[in-house]
Length: 265
Length: 311
Picture 1 (cartoon, each protein chain N blue to C red):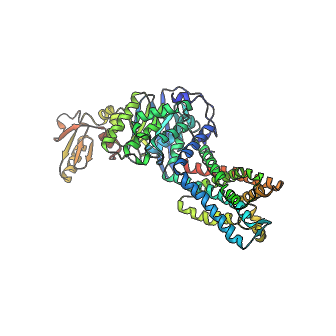
Picture 2: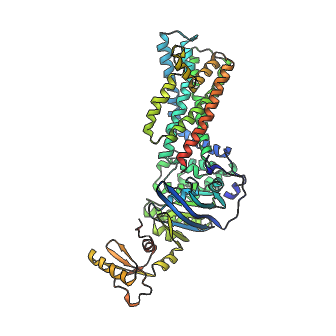
Picture 3: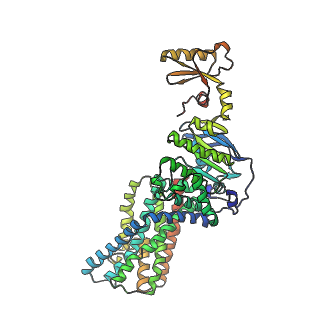
């Protein structure tokens, strides 16, 4: 075998082999840290679920027409997706770029930035897809009624997770120092997390906040998961899903632009 | 989308040069890191890019993988024009970076498996490719060791081995032995020598004179981003420094005095700490100063041509 023999096919854009190579690297690496990641990605949303569900739930039995524990269980799915995609993307990307120089090694191989970002985001979306189901499973244990629609939740998680992962990569690509992540976490992620209908319905908030929430991808993820569990709502869910798809596509291109700016000079 | 990704279908072209840079310029704001660089690596030859820190060596190396895009000039690697066709070129070359970028939590074997995927080694040949590299890098016994358990020399061997996983036609070595002790350096030289004997084209940046003299068929000396001399090490020494140099020791005042006299006589000189080396003595006849004779070397050439001491 020689390099020339391997070059039977012309390289192009977004090649499956290149994206696959990036994914293989992530999967093999995951074997060395899956325990800690799985622990934090499942225990944290579970604590949220139990604390809000049983703590606040003892004061408020029904919210938005749902038992509060059911309301929170479905809402926390979206939170789990957000946390298990955007934070690993932000910190992982920055560390691999700045400290481990991993991307220099990958880009010296026949892999382009576009494929690198796509592979990284796909992997995080897969993880978010699985980890995001944890609150739902815990909710089932605590009385949430199963439904066929719940089978769509991993797919919803994947699409939302892909968008959040790309957002995290873009943030890592645009910011110069890891300490600047604090600004993003406090000023962007926390408000998005709180104003998404996760722990309380948005109907009690001022009109302008409700309008802004329509631009929050997490809100659309919460809505979709909730409707998957309790009953689809037709065009409203088509809109929710379309929003997540567009969010993912836009952030994918933004992430690629940010990383090209960072990695190619 | 950067030009780097704009790859068109191609045929593997034949070329007598593994890589060629022509009038390449790279600027960072007001700083010109590479200034009209011309460089050729003939197929099957090892070429050294010799220069001090900041000479533009690493920038040049990054331009060859299109991680840095030249502002001016042409770059051709294995017949592919960069940066547009860089992906095709990267598939056929290996890169050993100056900075260790191994996956430290993975084992030696896992690192190689990852790169066998990234370099598109067919599935049926992946296992054999990993075994071949483990043998070349002499890491078979440590295949299950995590990288962060390896010594510095082993990590360097793994980095070199990783770059060979797809049997590249061209290998870029960016300061391959920097920071290593002499014994480990000797081990790596043997490994690089093996590549040379197998006909792999090599471009090696270094600031170690001995490394360039020992391994390179020809050397391109760069300073401030420009080429100041090109040739085989022995030819460069003969052309610019002559056969012998005379080292004259003395007080600083005496050295200044000697330097002035020798310059007046038309001999190039070089300050070497506690002494001054007088060069270009082949036609000196009786004008050669008294002092300790030694063979002239590549370092003398470098200092003569650039005015800079090399590390």
